[in-house]
Image (cartoon, rainbow, N blue to C red):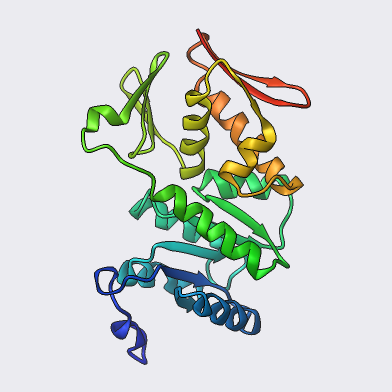
Length: 245
């Protein structure tokens, strides 16, 4: 609870039907515009400006999606995302940042980010990306846990838990890693157009998202390297083929 007591008045997830967004932004003018724009689209938005307070707010309001600025006072967005992932491995996390270096992209995704939006951005793009990650989060989850498992070579891929297990060792995947692996497996031994992957998982095929895809393909190759019968082949100028022997 803050000193004003406003957090106690914020409805818990079971009390509302609208999608709840935890929006973390220290630029007050920008934050006000984004918050009000999202609210006009029917979202419930709680905005926090101080990185140190975000985790407590997250636990209290149980949001459906987190939108985190990277550069924040006291605690940056990457650190906040890591803390949130220790509590909830499923909730979509979107980063907002002016940073464009590849190492920043990699760090954000390694910490469990689902998407990465550069400043300045349009509200249409932000809303589209929020809806996109929420759409994938709502994907069907089989009632039978065993039916939620896929054998991929030496690995067991658990869809809803977003884990990849091999020889007793289990690796937790991010939301985007899990969706990309699922897509590749469902189209195994077929060539998948790069643009189709980008449009399905990111919502558009712009250059920035294309760089994101490169990062994820590299990560999945690393995760699957213990089984030589599995290979994600780059078809230059076209896309990828997931070979499962």
